[in-house]
Amino acid sequence: DFHQKYFDKFIEYHTNNNRFFENPEEAFLESSIPGKDGSEYIIKNLVPVASNTVSVPIYINVLNKALENAKQELDKHYHSDQADEQIKKAATEGSGLQLKMDIVFGEDTFYFGKFIESLTISEGEVFQIYHEVLQSELLVRKKNINTYILLRANNPALSFDKKYEENLEVLRKNYNKNSKEETEQHFTQTEDIDLNELFYGDLHNLQNNSLILAEKAQDHWFNTKLSLDNFQFFVEKGFDPNMLNTLFDNLKVSFQKLKLTKIIANDIRGFTDALKKINEAEEMIAHITAGRINEFINSVGWSYYAPQEKEKIKDTNEANKLGLKIPIEQEVFHSLEKTAQPENGKMSLDKLLDYMEQATESLSKTSISPDVIQYIPMIKSYQNWVMLLRISFIANCDIPTYDIEANQQLGVILEHLKQYSFAIQ
Image 1 (cartoon, rainbow, N blue to C red):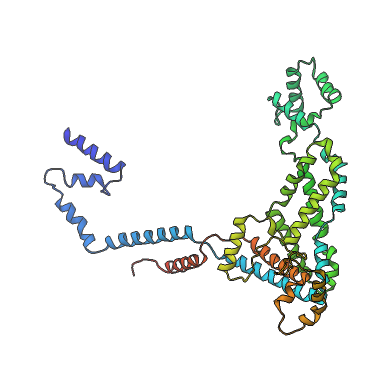
Image 2: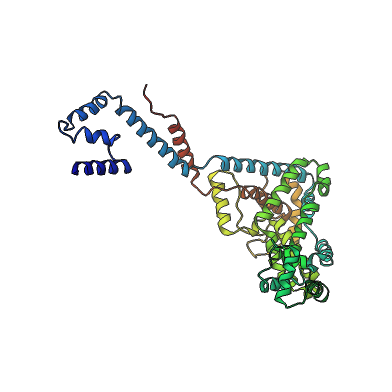
């Protein structure tokens, strides 16, 4: 009886826990009954081990598992070259645009000013957009939104899943009306409540007034300013339409990535979300909106980048040897104050006119003096702007935050590991 219980316990333990023996029953019977001390069983299992027919495949399997685990662990920390290739492509596109601009604007430096003007938006345009929106039903629909939200809150039994008649019955009971007809008449005619909106409207996702207006301004700028129709003059001067579309797409990505629409909405919210004040503030909110968009154009978004984002761009420039000159100042278009002479901190108008008179002669020389460029605001501003344009192409990439050189070395290691596989020859 004891022997049987011990046998049962042994089998249960080694079966449930996957312990030691491939065949627990055979191991017990070969070593725990009269005439069986386990020696023959041990010899029987040692013979294949001694001939390597069992041990070698086991060790090969262990090595292959270890190799696979190493690959998986290293692969967690490795970044593909996609980001690096994206940065190289962006740098090429930015440089290509600069080359074309150098040629076109070189014909007449005033083309650059016309180019920037074509990208910007006037306060009058924004005013007209906002005036039309404010006269539409877009904002009128929101007038009693708080009433609808409060009615929903005080009638929790209202449901999107219920039929119209069922939701009407909820209101009838809660407000002690005699019939559903009376309830419907009271809400729709007396209180001017849209019951379909109350029952099924997506009230909580309605945008506030400021965001509606800001998005309208963004759409207008995207569709009318960033379009080939608006740049036909420059197409005739030699700009490739595809190259211009690349510029437009880049500006749109930057604008959205920097969340300029929300920034504008926040700026004008104090004037727009109190309905009584909107009409009185049309000129103010148009001025604010145009200012934000034009500031974005003048700095190609640089003035909106967070400090940590600028650091990432600086690190990427150095790591990839892009040759970009990361600006210290926010301002691109320099005034006379910014073209100041060290001795008195100001540039006189007479001095500036002297430089401009000598500009053609100075710029035609084989070696152009940096002083000449420094004191010709148009050229200096163009240089700054086009550099920020190239930077914006890089900023719109998925900039890696890892050590690029170490990542490349890790990639080499992984490639070597892929060449290894253990097997019996």
